Length: 339
Ligand SMILES: NC(=O)c1ccc[n+]([C@@H]2O[C@H](COP(=O)([O-])OP(=O)(O)OC[C@H]3O[C@@H](n4cnc5c(N)ncnc54)[C@H](O)[C@@H]3O)[C@@H](O)[C@H]2O)c1
Image (cartoon, rainbow, N blue to C red):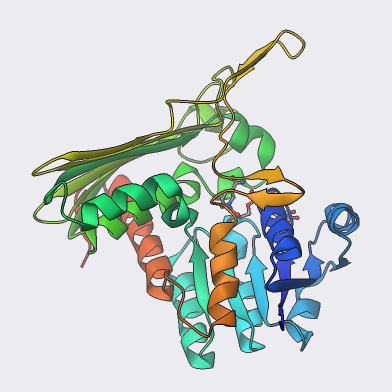
């Protein structure tokens, strides 16, 4: 079996999942990794026995590499993705595709020009809980959508301790990509109008200039969806994420509630109670297990089997368009037209 030769640019927290997946998946061969932080690149290179570079152009120019994951910070995707596409690579880019429609459009145009895959990593489409309720929905078991409510928030240590770049992102750019994509996936359409409100204050008091929380209403005409996000859940909360999804239909309802934790760890030594989020990523027998790895494998399968991934370039672009409109609505303090 001829394996797909891969590389990862940006091997931080999430890039490591791409590295781990390519390293262990039967259909892929991890050729090289890249990070501008040489210490991190070296650490990952040693851990996964793979060559490293600090210059992404070296990956772009490497003729044997066919597939590249870009897992750099939210606002650092465009130039790297375009360089890879220009050099004939297929690209899996982390969500959000970009933090501006202008950037996302130039990426999509480049992918079309070179006839290469450009897939955004919306991993919740591979999350078994959502796959299950989507199947029930598609069979018509809950009728037509009346409304959707969804919430995805993070504990404050994510923006304050995990990243140096939080002020250039925000809960809206970091977390809405997931819930907005889920809403559009169920809606099978795009909103007509958007209204949003966002507040700053807590994070800016720590010199992280972004929204603490944002709530958006997406009006699809026949139904609407409310989605909320926040980056200020207190550190004493036992879980990193607060994730809830509800679809009320004309004949039933679908709920996924990740606050119903099935795994709880209480430790006198660490003086904490912790509810780990198991289904996303865990290592079993040194291999990644969980839905975070599945889109990465799907990307490789698409190249391997010469088929289109289930997430199109336009899915990534429309997602950015919606979040940019959400920001416009907050700033203008009014409802904005989407189409
Ligand atoms: N952490 C999460 O839970 C999570 C989940 C899903 C998706 N994501 C997405 O993945 C992407 C990366 O997030 P992360 O959490 O891994 O961030 P991170 O800060 O942990 O890692 C980003 C890495 O990119 C490197 N980098 C920055 N500029 C670079 C460049 N020009 N060339 C090469 N390397 C560069 C940094 O040194 C860093 O190691 C983001 O778009 C994020 O939204 C993160």
